Image 1 (cartoon, rainbow, N blue to C red):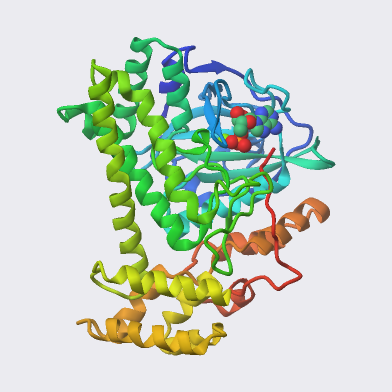
Image 2 (image 1 turned 30 degrees about the vertical axis):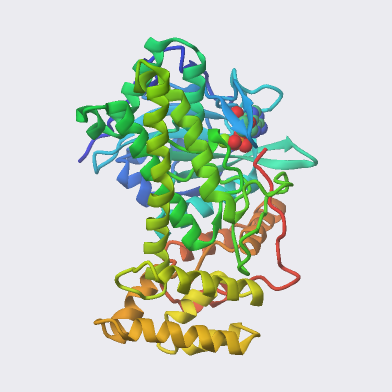
Length: 486
Ligand code: AMP
Ligand code: MG
């Protein structure tokens, strides 16, 4: 039987990067969810599964000896405004666990009470954001997007006070690490070159070990993070995912999607779509996600300048060249994902026109992004045309598409199979998340939450039992605004 392997490498880096802090016990924890397959991957001992001991651990009430809880320090640009000290105000890193695949991951409690970084906040989380993060992060994983995971969710039996009192909950998050661009901003601002070097070497060893043997390891790190983010954001765009709060403290160094606060999947295609109630100017609108990622990566590059070259102009030249490659890498990843959605085996530059023209048509006709691509993936792709009001433009596009895909070597059957593997039948539709949250928080009814959790494990499969989850929200069901967890 495999044994739990635990490390505390970030805690060992010392007090410049994190502070010890224990969770504050909650009154009456109860299970909302436990992710058994993930627990198995982590080789978590069975005594901490869906047991009383597990409940006590994931509520933060009773930590095993192998936990060494700390709150991590970080800074960040929030909506472009620099905040020098944010940090884990409602999260605690318990331990790093080595998974059965040999991957080291963080085990973190979210909503476990105040920390030295909770300025004004209570360190708690209402049940709604916990349900949303559990559902969406696990769905993103099933969709194949790099993401933090959800291991457990427990209600606290306590109320948290926001605009109105709401039941509280604690989420257990698993991530390759919780090191963000904001962590680098924090370390760089300490103004101590030795600390910056120590921390950067730590990140290279932990996440990008191949960089250590490159001629310029720090430049290689910058390039690797740029590549990881370009790939992740292209994946988001291909699924209509809107993160909602791409502050630099919410952008992971690993390229994993992190912080599912006001996130949402777009339904009717509109590139300007914004859900987050606090994003009044649409900084984090769907279409702005690639340029914002580059903006954030530029902040990351700035923190590395002292390591890139002793002379600043040369350091800037190196960083700029790396940043300039973002756009090309993003475009290539986006083209690859979007052509795959269209059933094109080998992307060609001319395919960008086929993509942009169908997106423009979808925008004009308010067509559901997910439904369209899924219907195009059927044996009767022409039926997707029923989603469009403007039939002339649709038929024009459709004949161009047909000519493009039928000229390929693969059979129609092969194409349909390939398209159904990249165009999901199910995405976490906002109104369903909202209904699940209401049922859990108002009636303590977990049934819809459990159904969605199960259905979204297999987003590319068709199950008649889940037919209601495929359809877009009706006018009455539509959720226009989403809110941060705070
Ligand atoms: P986020 O919205 O998760 O990106 O959080 C931004 C910052 O606010 C982070 O430093 C959080 O730790 C902090 N924060 C958010 N909610 C709370 C809370 N309820 N109590 C204390 N700190 C919080
Ligand atoms: Mg955050």
